[in-house]
Image (cartoon, rainbow, N blue to C red; front, side, top):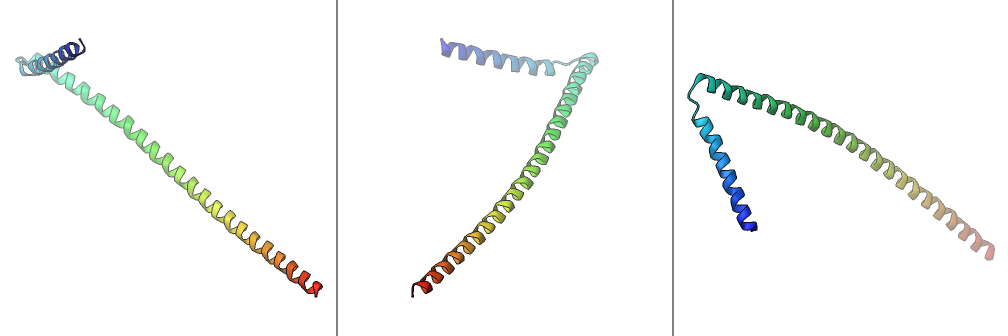
Length: 109
């Protein structure tokens, strides 16, 4: 039954496609041509509006992406600064420890 339903749907789709083609092919009067032209112009306007909306959305997304990249770069720079500061603190701690060890060994002798 699923295959039958699928075949029936394919027949309907093919029939609708043929009907649309026949409608355009069967335009015989100026009135029909005007109606067809009016329909096509409406579709064109609708497509242009949709294109404009998509373009605007794309531009907003690009701006948002640019902002996020800027924030990411700032965070990376901040992390690099923190890592440098941490490494400096480790060096200071190691030097202080080494001085204590050296000072203690001198006291021992």
